[in-house]
Image (cartoon, rainbow, N blue to C red; front, side, top):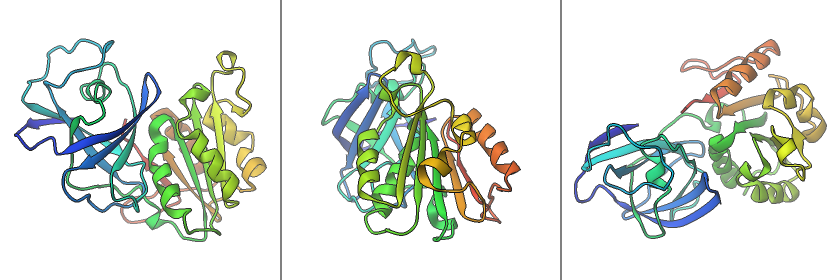
Length: 274
């Protein structure tokens, strides 16, 4: 997160949609005042609000409080399709001790917000061979870049396999669940595997139970998607909780997967923004 002095034109976009998944999760749609930048599915953009912007009730006290004329900024993965030119969509979790999210959660429909002038990031499908299965693993709002990928690519891609494995504490934390379940019914090359870690408090959930690494060890990809976790046939994307990324990366390394870098693409692709 960074700050900068604001000017009269800093808040250059409007909130045109706000869906509250539950009190600590929202989907925010933002329309820029000028032409929307181009982006690739999987990239991120910057949102910002001044220190003077109101915060939601229940946010932790700020000590020290930010200067009112400073713009508080943070990068968020884009969830909307790159084909969507009217707005950009973000999937955001509330951090009550944070500087920006308590202010973003206080935004109403029509509210003004800063949207950065471009998208950035290399967490895209560009460096993966088109014939390989894309295994997209996320916890929490780490799902956002995959939603952008699926909304963009599954509109025309009918052969390449995609699998989303999304972990959360409870079923009501599984944002986009309805859309992904529908997409999985309509697209035979897409499989959606949701999982939760606190089933004792969510007994109506009928999906898989346990942490992501346990779900993989149970053979969920093979059983639910018919996909072998093999570096010759699949590339794995990881986004979300750092501990999940660490544990799953180690598990994959034992199977012969390698993390990519600037020189070699590898077959493990990681987005770390926590």
